Length: 112
Length: 114
Image 1 (cartoon, chains in turn yellow, orange):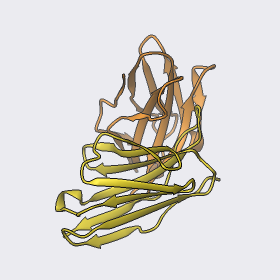
Image 2 (image 1 turned 135 degrees about the vertical axis):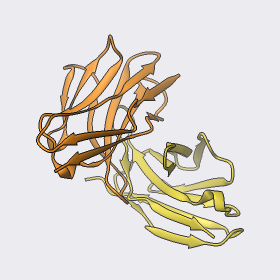
Image 3 (image 1 turned 90 degrees about the vertical axis):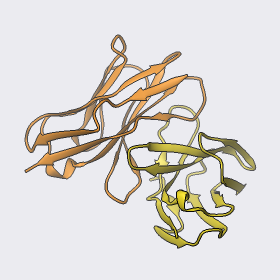
């Protein structure tokens, strides 16, 4: 089974801090995704990567950046955390073609 | 462009009764359709997909979905609901041959009453 591991389940940070969320997948998938999930808004795509060092902006990239130096690892960076970035963050990976995405268990991030 | 609508924010059903969670989609081309389930404080888990072939797709935990091209729908069904089916359900679509980025519906909360 594919396993997508997010480094933290719960995280509390302060306004203005630089925050790193890490995601690792073990199935050699080309595609990796970062979403945030908020009540009533569903999943919103922040960034997408289709290969090492390649990335594309999603629907809500403002205030975020990403890094993919190795195929299995995709990091989400909050450059200067703000309270409106308090949310559930989900990482996912997929292979090419018609295969489904595989999700991590999420990181619930609180910015105080 | 591609889009998904889940018209019901919440579905309530009694245990043992059949359940349906609705999904309609819009794509320019042939769709790949997916259902996922999310339990509290967990990520999304894949339930089933439609790629091509039989319109009735069977998936995990006794769930199935029917692809209806004329109505552009992909409703999730189960003949007999369990209390443990209570969760958030997401429908997703992407177009065959297009971007790898799927579009998700906003989710439907299924509540199964004992």
